[in-house]
Image 1 (tube, rainbow, N blue to C red):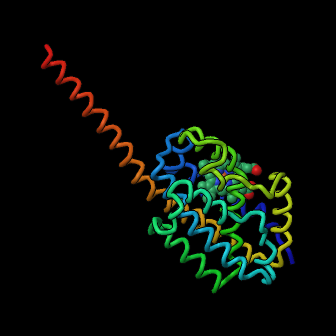
Image 2: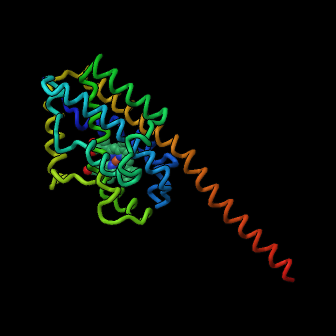
Image 3: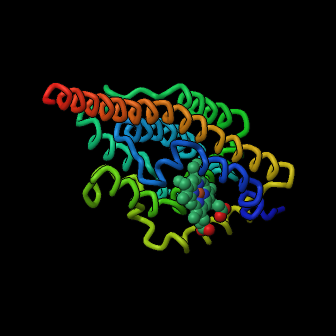
Length: 237
Ligand code: HEM
């Protein structure tokens, strides 16, 4: 039996998508306000998340459902490692630590891979199809905001093995619609995709704290500089 999972996922996560877009970190990012320290923390968190997803999906390559979404061309772990080497240096592995939000996200991926592997489809869809959809826009914003070159620090957004992203997504949706699942499982996958959005929002909210602190620091520096400049004027007068 097959169900129209692709459109159910799109419709069933619309609200969560809007909520994710409206988190402080993401909306600042969209406006070009990107703090490099927060951004590299996100890259590190994503490395933990994609490593977990790619490890579990690779392990389940022969699973009747999970095996069908095991597209090597989507894998992000290696691109994230290139970006981590750029932001943290060659020793990046010893410098990064998953935030609590990323730790909870990773734990959830491992748990469902063990207990109900089919639900990994919800996680896969949320991250990889999101990356394929918003990727280019986000790459351009990050590039401008952090003054980066063409590729360094931006490999995560590049799908070298997918020249036709639109065509890939059309095929991916057809695969989703032909998965051997019933409606009850489809409902659970949509619910899990919403959980995946929620996990992402939690990670973004943690970064908001850093971003606010960074903006606060800049503002504080600006105000104290003005004050100092002001007091010089007073002395000079
Ligand atoms: C930074 C803000 C974001 C922008 C500008 C953005 C942009 C877009 C756009 C334009 C589409 C439609 C693409 C199409 O119709 O083919 C889309 C779809 C999608 N986005 Fe986002 N997005 C953002 C944030 C996110 C986040 C944070 C996630 C999840 C972590 C996400 C997951 C998805 C998914 C799963 C789809 C596919 C929907 C479908 O089934 O067609 N997006 N996004």
